[in-house]
Length: 481
Image 1 (cartoon, rainbow, N blue to C red):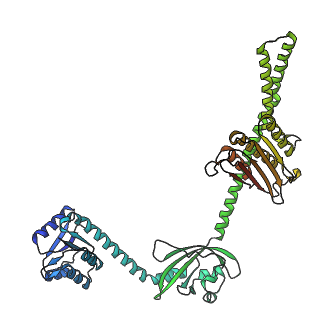
Image 2 (tube, helix red, strand yellow):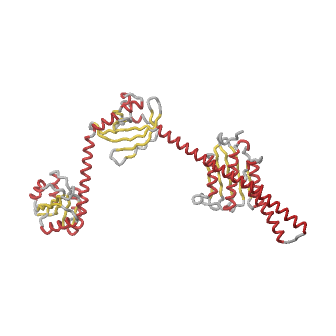
């Protein structure tokens, strides 16, 4: 706040004037207070004192705040006007605020006065700044014209009422291929493709400024470009027009699309590498279990059996040890079969799925069935077959762990456009809106996503669960000889 604030106070009671002066000083407001107690002194002070703010009592002899405010307005003095009074009706307070007063303060609440003065001055300074900005805008119409002509980006002016183009700069002529005369015969709507949905644009914070968005524009030679359009409402030769600036972002969008495509390819490469490394590790572990550890256990079993038979030993501990070794060998065989990919030998995908189903039916209470009437083994690439096997294997493990199901139905088919896999169980089901983020499902989604596939879960509590996997059939998925 200005240290030399000039306050004109209209008040005929000295004691009330002193209270106001103390309240002003207590509020940290410094400056000069000029006291006027009649109409003539008030008018003279308006001319000679040039106040920054006016404080006015409501009722003076043959003079009141309403008349004082009217005089201020008639003299075109634009400073804050605050009414200070002992009592006032709500209707009068509303009316004087509407007529231009900044605020009103009751004399028994003068502690509010410093804040009211500060707020009124802030509002006044803001209004002055806004008025100056408007005046500056009006005086800059010629500058707009100069910037319009020399701007390196395409620009044109259109009538706000008809949207006809009324002027165009050289950059627009060069970029769009029309002559200036041809441009001036075009309605601005005809430059944009008609099947583009018009959103009406969005108004920015600055008055009259619009960010209308990205549109498809057609050049004279038929070329389609993507145009980022910004419009600004201005006065030109005392007429409201819309100044349009166009930035051709066709190449930018193409570059962004290519970058996105490259990122997707990179992510797929990372996924493919991860899957291959995982399969290689599973293969090595499976082969190690089968070829080495299982053989060691088999030899140990032979020695143990030989000792039992030769020495006719009937020790219960020996018999239990023999049984445990047999059990370990069986478990390692199952684990080895689960780890080693079906493509390692001559086994086909359907045979591998059949063995998996046989093993599950044999070792658990879960009953599995496979429908493959529309599946052609030779049509698919080996990596795709492995992906299908792993998804079936993963989902069966999920069902065994969580579903409590008795039956599972697997359907596998290949159409002219897609590979379709569906795995349905009659288990407990679950709410898909609350529980779809398990590791198993993430692995399934990751594997399918590498081949641009989609995964869909259909389930609800008590209604079982269906996993649907759809893989688009492209040259990449077909078998390569």
